[in-house]
Length: 219
Image (tube, rainbow, N blue to C red; front, side, top):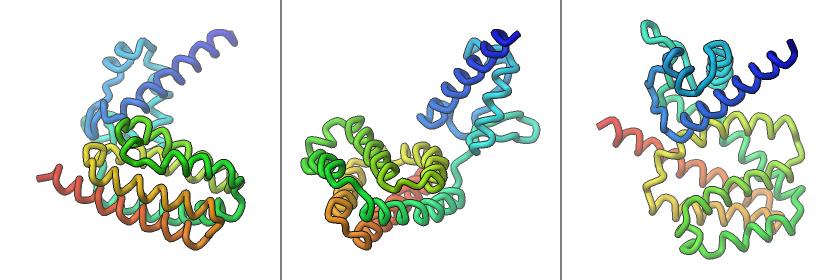
């Protein structure tokens, strides 16, 4: 009996991980209906673990029920983005300030070196996104506050999704890379206020760019 339960949990985990990756990667676009029979067959699971996976995604706000349509991938609305960034500013600015205070300087010096040559860095966008993810992880470790880090994890799920809106904007990526470098520089120097300010500026510019992208896509 325990083997069956374990198999079911693994199927649910697998379905959840694949659906989440496809939603965050925009392979499953906002508004797409996730019909149970179709998705279960596509993912190679039964309907019970699929429902468990969809329930977890709903708890994260990535899918929701729509009258007459069933479960759909949630849309990305401008008001939702603004609300997300209000929370993001509160959390990430605090995290940057704490990271500058508590950091292992050598960790951020290493990251600082990777941000120096922006042309080389952006020649491989996947490398850039990987570096940003490692910067986030380093800040989380420096903060040393599991409550703050847990809250940041929830926000980053949605940030990863909407970030794709600016992936093709090369000039914005270049600006963002410079902004990340300023954040790292401030943390290396232990400048709490400067780290907080650089983070807030980066988030403000990111929000402006994403809202502009949403407006263009709606035209």
